[in-house]
Image 1 (cartoon, rainbow, N blue to C red):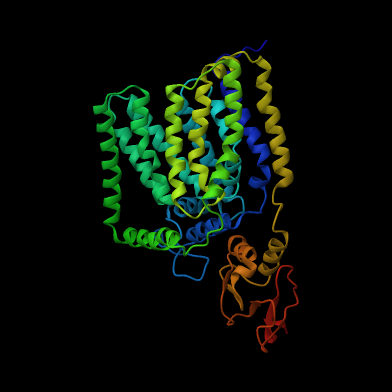
Image 2 (tube, rainbow, N blue to C red; image 1 turned 90 degrees about the vertical axis):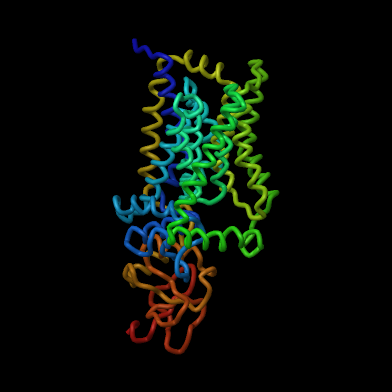
Length: 451
């Protein structure tokens, strides 16, 4: 008869949680539909891999000299995957899966002893997690660097020689900043909070906190001495940050939306934790309070911004999962150890289900059907690297515009100097309706080309 110890059962449960999550999000990983933001970031990364633009001045799919809506690191990292794997629609999904697994590894190492599978379970059941890891959001990379920094700071707190770990923690914060901006700074508080958790003296807390801040400032200062980096980041600050607080950026949602998003993400895990804690007579520990403080240090500053989206909350969610799970650390360890040996069958069954779901969904769309068909039809007329004109704002056919860039590397430019023109009405006497009829908008062509 097969026998498993507690460690084996923990690994099997962790693998089962990951595979269950994969089954839930299989369409996002195997399909071709994606949100506009994800399409934009994947297109920029793809063009970077093809040699367009530079690291600090990425190619923009919009009619502008370079893309400075966000810092450039994510595009540089993702472009490496395109260079290695090609231009397939699944490349950005491979990137997301690799970073997800890295983040899971770090979280389970932060947790330490048995029961890490429960932290990952709580985290992956938060709705925004499924969104960001299937739609190529910048928060995928930001979350990895945030968790990496906290992991390194925890090692610094427990290690005899903390300098190297603090250096790694500072580097992760700077890399996070180069991925999404100031929101990446919240891990700065972790070293003090974790020292408090471990009953360190005030002198130790102040020493390590000052060291971490000095390292971050030093790295950032050295980076800003490089002119391309300084120019790129200054344009990002002017466009995105100052534009947001001056009200120049579109504000689809406000601070009340962020609060509602937090409730939707945290309520299930919180209610589960409170219910089990009441039933098992468990109380919050110093550890759970520490993780809660770190999570709130990520969440609360977000309310300063008048501009909110559902994915903004993502970086704080792993730390809320750690906070909730730590309340039930002992019961989770005991429960996992008591599971029967048949738990070994669960990962295999889930793997079979996932493979079936992924294969049947591979290359299919679950949204934007017309835009995807139109983009593919236009690719039969226009070669990759070429452009198509338009007589109207690309906002009128935004998703088609982005699928053309991502799937076929076809640019849409606001002029009438092209052979093919996207327009809801005739752009002029020199153009006639094209033989190919698009579903989402109109298409016109010069009489010479049509003949």
